[in-house]
Image: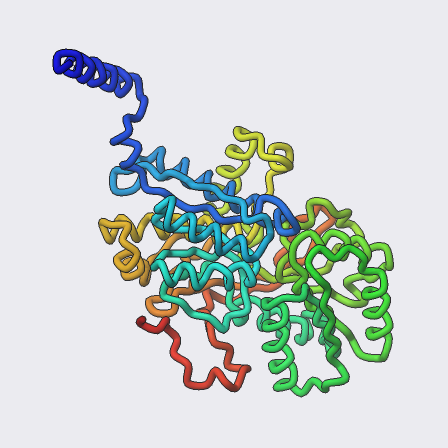
Length: 425
């Protein structure tokens, strides 16, 4: 028996060495990867926006691994589909942290999904990188927010529309999907507009559920509201696949940008893919990045994505590769995380959090993005773009340089005195 065991052991060792020489990983080597959680909806109403973020993370994992990985280890993606189901985001997060033992999670789009994930990430001392503009009013030591806070998108967009260059709007339609991000952003915008002397009667607020498809009566209502004598603008916080019927109806009813400009905070190149954009020329989006921005870093980013999308046969992108703002925020996030792990010489959550403070990365937007030393938000430039006939954006306005995020809006009175950094727990 013992001879047989020794022979088996020798055979196993020889086989293992042979497999290693051929490039196969042994069990021990497989355990030497760093697992990275990917938490984006690949089905349901938000798949239109989130699927491409999953692919962006996988692209960067391949790129980082091609350069030798992090701390001498390859990154191993663990992809899950929370399917636009908000409670399922929390379940998948627990699975990623407790069972799969991921070192970090990149994910969520909607604030309701992030709010679902947050208590789990905090309880298990995980790390979440959140890549989409949001309403602020939150700060967690376990989250890095690489998308825009309201003062890095919503407030500048409304200020632009109020200006002479933006058309001197006097009446406002706040139109959104019915959940926390649009409601809180519009609470901030309503307070901001009132501080600028806008009367209650000159603000119309409307919400539709996720997946809403019939915008005929709402567009008719906007047309009536805008016909009452003052220049009107629409601020859209519609999220997900509802943007397609909204913009189609805008075109159907002939609501042109010269009459009633729409500025969107959740519509980029990807969401306009399924829409005839010719009737939408001149409508606006406010972001911190557009594909059309000219910079060496963006040329490299767009080419990298185009090559990857074609090589992988990514639906929609192999023929018409598009990049957008949340893709850029995802790209910045994973690269900053890799830099922080390298600096910390560890994937330990607390050590990586400390190493993230002040990290910089040359962003495709052409600016050097910096992670604030305290508030877990990026310093970001703001761009306003007009929709062009080809579905791209022409930048018509931008900030002189990066803007520091205000997680707690100064337009909400109860925020007075709140600290601009996560509480130590």
